[in-house]
Image (cartoon, rainbow, N blue to C red):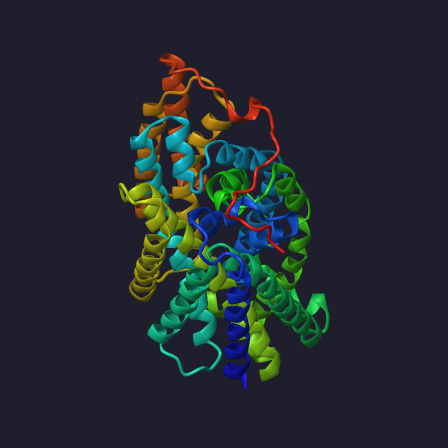
Length: 479
C-alpha cells in the first residue's frame, strides 16, 4: 500500500509536468530556462516556496534539532524571516538586472553588466561548485525518506529513481515543470508535516508531553556563548545569501517587478509548518534517543505514529520536495553549462545541451551521495558558504558605480578558496559563521580595491528607471 501511494503521487507529478509544458514545446532557450519571463505572482510564489521549503525543511530541520539542539532551529527560522524582509527590496532589483541584460543565468548578468567574459566564467564555475553539494543535499534527503519506510530499495535504487524523475521534469518542459509540480508538492508536504506534528502531540499527551524535561534538557532551552554567536551570525549571513545567492532561479521567470514583490509578501505564511516539525523533532528525541543517523528522525517518528496509508502521503510529500528542488537545481546548472561555460553553443542548440548537462549533473550528484553522504545541515552550510561569494558582485551591480571588474573576479576566487579551506579544516572561530568570514574577505577585496583604484563608471541597477516588463515573443503567459 505504501509504495503504491508514493508511486501514484509521483506518477501524477510527471503528468502534471507534461501538462505544464503543453504550451512551451518548441520554444527557445528563454522559454526553457526562465519561462519567457512570464510567470504571474501566484506561480512565482509556488516556484519560490517549492525551492525554499525543500526536503531540507522536512528532513534536515528536525535532524538539526535532534543532533545539535535548539540553536539550530533558532538560526534556521531567524534567517528565513530576515531574508523575506530583505528580499522584498532586493529581489525586484535582481529581476531588473536580469531583464536589462536579457539574462537567463546569474553569470549572464555578471558578464554582460561588466562586459567581461572572464568574470562570466569565474561566476559560472563558482556557482557550479556551490550547486553540486546542493544537489547532493536533495539526494541525501530522498535516500533517507525512501530507505526508512520499510521499502526494499537499496541506496543505489533510491537515488536512481530520484534522478530519473528529476530528469523527466526538466526534459518535458524546463522551468514550468518545477513551478507547477510545486503546487502538488506543497499540498502533500503541508499535509505530511501537520499530520506527523499533530500525532506527536496527541500521542505524547499535549505539547508538554512532547517537550518534557528529559527532551528539553538535551535540546537546550537557552543559548549562550558560541551557540548564540553562531546563531546570530548565521541569521545575518544566510539571510543575505538567500536572495543574492539562490534568488536567480526563482526570480528571473517573473513577468514584472511587481510580480516579484507580490509573491514575496505572502511567503512568511509558509513558516506555520515549523511548530509541527519542532514537535516531531522533540518527540523523536524523547522516544527514539541515540539514532545512528540523525537525518532519519522525522521519518522514524512518522513511521512509529501513523498508519501505513497516511505514512504513504507523508513519504510522497517528502519525495516530491526533494525531486522538485533537485530538478530546478539541475536546470540552473544545465543553463550555466550551455550558456556560460561551453563556448560558442548556438542558441538553437542550447536547449539540447542544457538537457545533456542536466543528466550529467544528476549522475555526479548521485555518485557523491552514495560515496560521501553526511549530515544534511552540514552540506547545506557548504552550499551557502560557496554561493555567498557572488553576493559582493551582486551588491556592486545593484548599488555601486565604479567597482573594478578585476576586483570582483579576484574577490570571488579568494572567497571560494577561503570557504573551502575553512570547511575542510573544521575551524570553529569561536562560533562565528565561517561563511561570513569568507564573504567578508571577498567584500574587502571588491570594495577596498575599487575604493583605492576606481573602475569604469557604470549605472547601478537600483538607480535605473523601472520600466514595464516585455514578454518574450515565444512565451505564453502561465496559467
